[in-house]
Length: 443
Image (cartoon, rainbow, N blue to C red; front, side, top):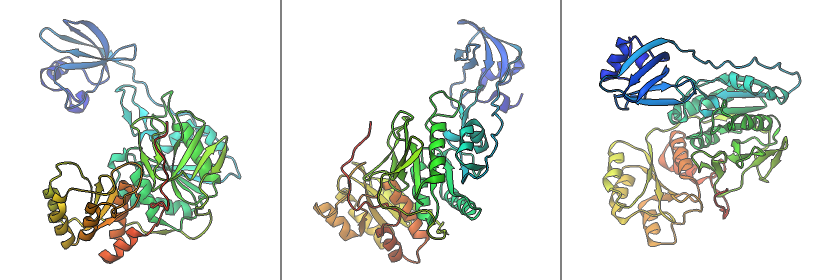
């Protein structure tokens, strides 16, 4: 029996399962000192111990049972394997605005595997359309898969791919584009596309969900309905991130792509705008603008600046931080480093020599705030002033994640360091706030 049929099992337990002719999903009876259990065999985490068998009971619960001396495995047959079967696609209505949904994966494009109990990035955006048929009343939706991965696997290559797919959709006449994306690195991707998409003529909306679409508490359908309607009808042409505004389903809020951060691991309102107000919200079937200044729909012709430098680091300063860490990045040929400094933009004086060496080697150094809210001011304390003299560029209230993405973009789209620094100082996509709001965590 192949390893793929006994995923995660090893040692004597695997030998016993093989001897009984049991594979993943098979119905079996497991007899041990703890009693007799019947259920279907589940795969296990590869790094788990090698003496527990995992069964899914008829009740639907999984149970782990210790395998020891005298334990007996009896194959009872092939267990019924539930499958996900999406309903048929709704009929497309004539005369509706055209919105493109491009799937990159993540929880919003995931479902629960009823055999393993795990979440898989396996559902296509076509599935999403069939599960949320109300979308057919809002827009003429075309949906396709660009990537099918969790967001921790998305980087510059995928950012470029997303940008080029958006350009194709714009050329084909889309009046809005929705990008489904995992939430964990959603803020990085929305920032990246904010810099890449120049002269954007339509809304581009990133959307994710905190719970997969087949769970009763899922926010996927509500998020999709809100963002598709907004993509079809909103007056703005910006890159934004749309998610639940509160724990309830009453409104979807749209954050600037460069000013959103995931501030909670699991709640529906995980994303919030930092140091600024959101751009808009969707409530009671309508788009309400919050910001007064924004790029208007239909203005300009899309241009792509879709290159990114890979040798850029984002480093969080902490007590005991070693200068050799900076030296390593310099020695490895890094071209830029964003420092997450404490308070108003500080690191220890023990790093000064390493930072001087980095500047001498041509490494661009930027300082972003480690705090969630507020902006750095490197003119207040002597440490900040000394760091500026060394060559560390203060980046105001730009989010550290956004600064990291922007520096990668600036270095790749400039002819020299001075030009890259000029791009870093310019407010290109709302990454700097003219006035930092005294806001805090919602909820």
